Length: 283
Image 1 (cartoon, rainbow, N blue to C red):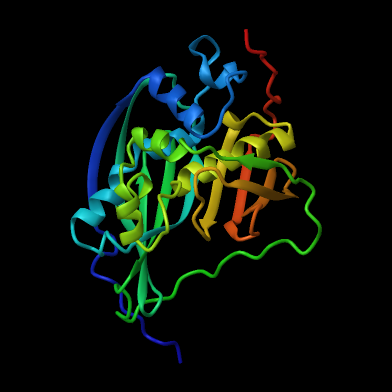
Image 2 (cartoon, one colour):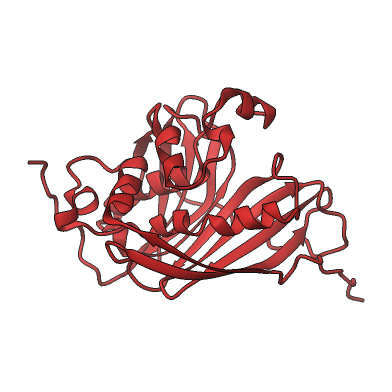
């Protein structure tokens, strides 16, 4: 017999529609915040600017915040568990996006629940998976299991060096949760000190992974990863990447100093026919 499951009352909840505008300055600030160097004129100079697709996630941050504000879970203990992004078209250098959001799924993990918040517009579909302690036990489906690491040596091994100001800079793009800048707020959340936003870590890892594949990071078409442990500003990350489907890569990242895994189950795919980036030296 098939066990009967009970859906959460939040499943399918409509979070509304919002139009968010942005400028070239916002897109450039984002590229700098996630680690683009001054020599990447294609990412940091308006004359050659290509907007990173992951920038869209800062524009859609209102949706998971809106669900927390409605009382679906305790915002002081909930954490960002994983992220998915499907790119439908490139972002303009500036403009506005009209986005609709809903709670696509709620998974019952027993003592906790995972809320999948889906945001859609004509340029992308993004899904935040929010792990909320104390919200499970309603009799729902446990949801999909974590993807496995490929059983072979990695083909790529780039590194990422975060910097001490990175969380303070990234929060200016919209995610201003205090735990990323205030030591007391971080301690209240169970962390020894302020830590980097998971989405900043993910985007920072994507830049060298794209380079390793000979792809331009703006040609990203699909991305997903789980946030396994916090990254603290200044951490150096060791990346491992496994070629997947020619234009894609499976990946994970760990802190180089203590080998704790910080990103797991990662997968990125780039447009297969897009040319690799051209080096544009700093003037």
